[in-house]
Image (tube, rainbow, N blue to C red):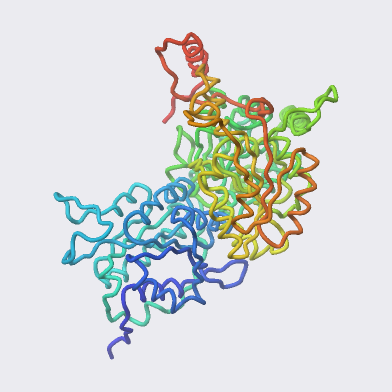
Length: 626
């Protein structure tokens, strides 16, 4: 008997297949794809749009204002969902598609699932050249969609409807794989979207996916245990992979059983709560004195779920020269970095196994005391750093740290924090005190301006599924706000309330700081230092936010901020709080490690030449491993 088939267009089959994929989340079967974000154009409205309309209840579609921000929202959703679920973003052909390149970079760098469904040129080429087609006379099959190959984990162009039978399972496998997770790009030629094919009915049967967990190799595990047994000053670096593995409890149990201090990467913030006695702060370039001091003395470092980015390693200067690294990671690429002893495996499974292999080992009293002293000293520094009042009783200039400390004080434990590029990631990482696990999203892998509000919108769509009575708090500078803010409007339309705290320091102040710190004059970063035809003036962020339907106000003090935050909590829609912060004073001065940046070896400026010499002096501690 012949297998039963369904005659569907390629677009209809794609959408139906997505709607049939499920995942087990806390024992409940939910759709793996939670829906998507879409802006329609001629390249996706007639066929894909028709299929999405027919499945609008199964796969809700949210209309964004910009393709880049839509895909950012999908990234924010995936991160909030700890990669267990994803959303798609669909665009027409041409510029609508290329707008998503930046978002694909965020997803690829941060190992997050994002499905991009983009219109493409006609396979038949009969109407060529068509609207928005970039022609390549020597390569007629090339389109702007090929640009996504460098920022996709899986890329395909569907040139026949039957290809979905192989391509869609491969795409889903990539989106949910712990080691290879990342963005998937599917180019959908406009004619092929509407072509029909007799698909097997079995292709659309509901399928429940589960998080794959890899057990580590016994030999790698034994070698790692042997290294840790020989350690006098072990240290754990906890990365974002701990959360994606749902292994925060296992991390806590491992650290406390063996009394090993834990430091966090930027992506790994909120692996431990602030009150945990073994939480010794964030590590690296924008870290803490406590974490960096311990890293500098540790003889064995257990790096769990981290890709060891330069902001974590201080461009590989934070570790003692003789320190050895054990890298526990689901990705073999990450596990093998810098001559580490790899343990390729799932953190939730591997940490208990590694603990058993340590035979009840605990660290020395002297190392625990050292960690406690460093932790206490750093906490005292942050206490002072977030205070609007100096030790002599005078008022300090308004700073990022004060804003962060004030919001941290009055927010609920289960509120979620989102930040991204500029100075705020460093200041949030250093000064935010985690009240609940997994409550911080600092996008500093791709360090993408504009992610804050758009990513916050997506994060809120996911956050409100579990915490409808809590808030998603977005910290954003004036520079990122001006780059991408239209999802304030999206959030109001979709009922996905955020509290957005806008810190206006008159431009790109953190890059101005880097410019000055390397001996350069202020130029083209602060608005006042740009080429202007008029006197510089500040944007009225309150009025702008109100024009997009949000509630908003401007505050002028830390106490005013706390009061405004209380009103924002009571608001039924997105609430924007704007304030000015100082562009020069109030930066967190402690907790930094060396960071490699290119500085001019030759310059007419004595200050630039001296800065180059000073900067290069920091290279002496840099590890040369690969």
